[in-house]
Image (tube, rainbow, N blue to C red; front, side):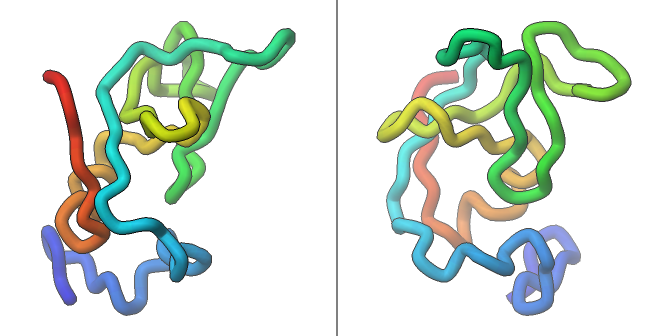
Length: 93
C-alpha cells in the first residue's frame, strides 16, 4: 500500500506495529511531561523528539497524543502517513 508516495509494506517505521490497535484515538496537544524529570518524548513511529520548547535536538513542541494512555506521541508527518492505513481516529482540532 502506498500513502503520500510511501510504500507502507517496506516502511521501517512500521517494523514493530503488527499489533497496533485499529481505531485508537489521538488528540493534538502541546507536549507536556507526565513524569518527574522527564524532558522529552519520541514519536511512536519515527522517534522524532518533542519537548516543551522546540530545539534543534527536539524540533517538536506539540503532537498527537493517544487518549488511551496519554503517553504515546505521534508526530504530524507520521500521523499523516499512518492515520488511514492504521485506522487512527483524531479528535479535536
